[in-house]
Amino acid sequence: MRPEVRYRFRDLRRDDFPLLGRWLKKPHIARWWGEPAKELADIQQAMESTETRPLMVEIDGTPIAYLQWYDPYLEEGHPYRDQPPGTLGIDISIGDPDLTGKGHGSAIIRQFCTERFAEGAMRIVIDPDPENTQAIRAYQKAGFRFLETRHSIYGPAHFMTLDKPEETSKS
Image 1 (cartoon, helix red, strand yellow):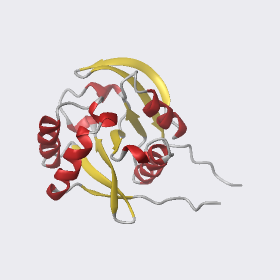
Image 2 (cartoon, rainbow, N blue to C red):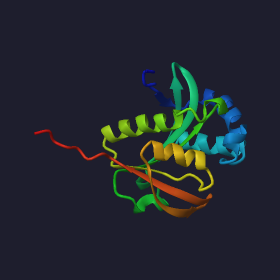
Image 3 (tube, rainbow, N blue to C red):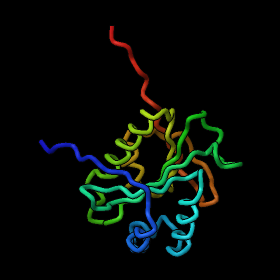
């Protein structure tokens, strides 16, 4: 049996931008993201904000994915403020297309969510495009459940949630 992969989440650095720019041009990412230069500018802005935390996901020191998480309660007028306090939102993209479809997406999300729940998060939300069936399957595999279709500034969103597991006492 293969041992479970442990992913490392580290803050995105400016020297990650060339790699991130290459990833944003890959068809499996470009379909869901905007023009790479604009996206990199938005990510740069997110690096300087308090609302969003951009991260690089690594295996054994090799970057394999971009993940960002945000607190909708830190952004004035964020549409996900209708979610319970303690909610965080995430976005993720696997960089190398050869690494997609191998379970990394759902495994990364499971590990990331477990760590955030241990730190006090109560709910995690994700909002893929309804046509991004590969991502939706990965999020379902990670435990996310469909809540509703929403419409954002980016278009329709398949709004999904994952709640912190109930703690049970052992008697």
